[in-house]
Image (cartoon, rainbow, N blue to C red; front, side, top):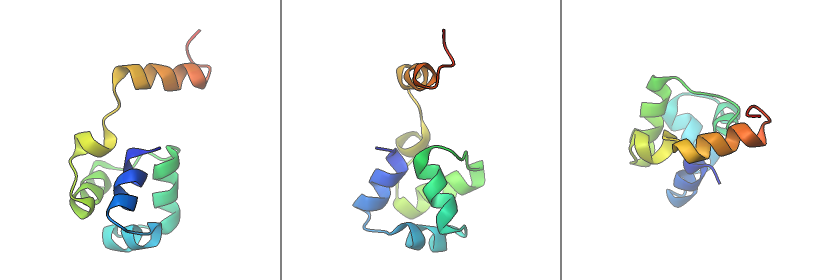
Length: 77
């Protein structure tokens, strides 16, 4: 499960509540949680502040995880 989604659920926020607090749409939060949208640094910081987490907690991708995602997407041969 995506780290942003896990933190949002732990904070007892809906996607809409997180969106309202960070100044974006619910659809934007949904896309971030699905990993199909890369938010700006400003938005990342807003999300971190709102969820009381660090950038590392929510947005850092370990090199093993990054390689696994590339393999799953067929980007590494």
